[in-house]
Length: 118
Image (cartoon, rainbow, N blue to C red; front, top):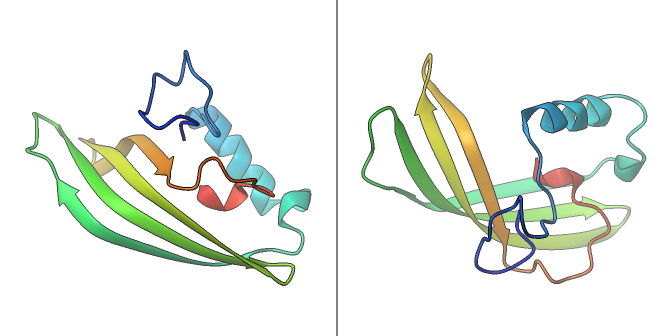
């Protein structure tokens, strides 16, 4: 989730979130456990995915673009997030997500937490 608008290289520029597979696994484990203070009380969330477009597939993988809207209600406060997403799907025992990029429209807003954007 790049902090800038042009989706720069996340290894060289600031990102709001930049997780590899291991870090994502740790994040999921923490949220499923009892020590997820950022989700106490837990959020109620509705995700809407629209405008799904697929690029011309390459051998063994395809890029898919979509628009994501998330409505979160937590601790009596409602928040709205909008993003353009890109997924690289790879053929490997079915389709697997090889890369995911979320470009928040409101990326320069103040965030309480972003745990809901898994």
